[in-house]
Image (cartoon, rainbow, N blue to C red; front, side, top):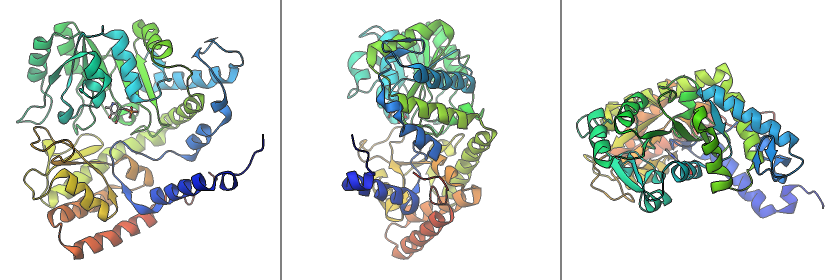
Length: 420
Ligand SMILES: Cc1ncc(COP(=O)(O)O)c(C=O)c1O
């Protein structure tokens, strides 16, 4: 086998990687609420020889020989995760948030049985019971909704839906809900109907780990998450649980829904959890929230309406129902000035999911770049001006220039001394 530099071995892939580095570094302000930038030490572990080995099973109990160092990194990842989230048990093997949810639903709810989850257009995720997903196909989902008046999940509404559905499991946790997730309230509902409570904290796991959000434990029985959003780690999934569910959780991943774990990803998860244990990460998470509030103020200053009137976490959801434009158009208008966001349904949206009446924005990635409240307020005002004046090329050109200046002032990987 001959080792060669990627630039020589595969110039096409090399060029695409370099273009992507340039895009992330200098092309646009990343405001997709589920995205972030990992530090180089995480990239380093991901690109390591840990990828070469099969390690089916769990530390101390593998189906293959030679797993000494794989056991070591997986144990580190598990211990760090338990400490960060106050969990008794962690399974760090799920390849993604969706496969984590697949394993849990499959093992903890009988096929065809009843589950209660949020309506997709009210902030839920596809794997919380949508028809086009395994979850809607294999289980009988009932749904709860956001309250029309408060635009929050209210106990009376969730309780009514739970009594009607009589589910085996209730899912709480959302992709587009700008308010605190009230795990305690969901526990009260779950107890009333004798259901298992699963929280999907994919979006807010960084805030939870830093103590900047209500903790899911002890209220929830099982917690699933992705490891790459606000927690700023290697891409993948994870399941956390109380001790009594540990064995079933592990079986739900291997052998039920996966084969060999991606050990290079698990090594990188361990590194990112170590990062999240540092005091600097607590400051980072607090800044994400302050930045989201400043962003909300900037948007409101320019006359835009936000779902629920603001934010408690890392995201805001702009409601464009009273504006001239749809979510799809809004996303495109922002992309033209170098702001990357995504169109998103708002609760009770008259538009289809491909068009929508909302734009979702998040602050984890820009906070990683080092931006603070003044910058996010300014960006909020720019977004407000752009969405209110779609035809104004003067505003567009001014914003375009200002976005380039901001990108230049907050380098990402460029000034780091460590090589890729
Ligand atoms: C709440 C929630 N759960 C699960 C997922 C799925 O994660 P993945 O894309 O890793 O499958 C997402 C992804 O955005 C999410 O927002």
